[in-house]
Length: 125
Image (cartoon, rainbow, N blue to C red; front, side, top):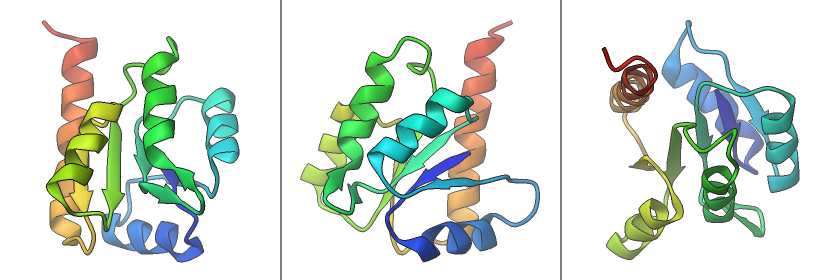
């Protein structure tokens, strides 16, 4: 999974929440995230809405408009919690929206759900 967050401790906290069995790569900017996506396709993208002065919503739109990435599951994991924030996230192309602070079990359940949905889309039989 690729985690995009300008907070250097975010990757560590999420890795701790997920436990073993999940491999996270971390990007701290949109440019770095796009380079990681070009280098190798992750199983999932998890992004903060605000990446420093940049926008995770812009990253969502980029993913949905890039043919090789458009089916990549995207989760926004953010402290932006208003209904307007959530709708903007889904409108930008996010598949899920989890608000910080999060419960580790809830986060893992949402990630597993997105993984199951991806497997189903790839193998509908």
